[in-house]
Image (cartoon, rainbow, N blue to C red; front, top):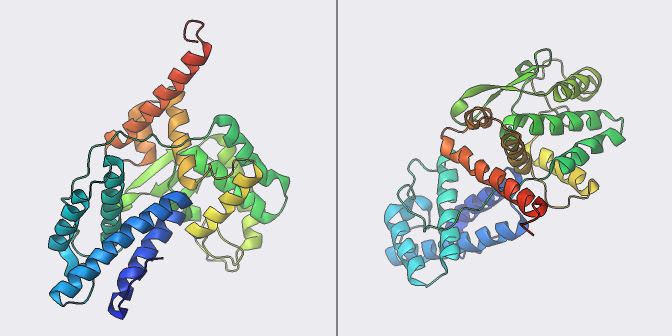
Length: 313
């Protein structure tokens, strides 16, 4: 997706393509956002190449380092971009290097101390409770084993607020349908036990009993959710499944795996759940990350007030 002129720089291109695929599959970014990130990171690659030619070194993230990144940040700020545009470019850069470190491609993060321009927080996208019900009801239109798996996955995503990466990492031993709980391992392999509503537990139990045996090809397969080959479902596989049901439910591009996580948190807080409890269930290390959903809940209250109060119209 990014044009790189020298063969030595092909690894730079591959790293960015890997990152963009992660944003698409794992984070469910829209095509417009992916295009913007591709443009922003392509701009950085061009700078990496110029910097490498000037210093007569191979274009690489290791050779670029903190000094190269600092110079690139100075150039960005000198171009007179709007604050929101500059913030997006800085965010794309920081996200990319965070990903590279997490993926083991870089030992040190050159963007660790890079600061972003201050802009207003954007609220997470969430769908309504009615839209959630419509989405979850879609697999019931088929009796195929895959449909029972899909119903279980959709119910579980919304019931728990898990990240998609946590969902596909689940093993059979992690679900307790008798006690309506699920065990998952979040960032840093931190274990948490999440309660789930009975209907979600029942959907998972039906899948395990009636559908999963027909899908697995080996008795010792540990994965809870498997694909048609009987192997652990991938992030991309789950995303494709979800997109199909979202389209069938008339929700178009409004739904991603992350949207169900946002909807879980928003609906829990709107229903009166304790912020600390929601933090624990989402697996947020810092409560400030969870607090953004209080703004979403407040927006919901404000809209209800404005539409209902006779003096607000």
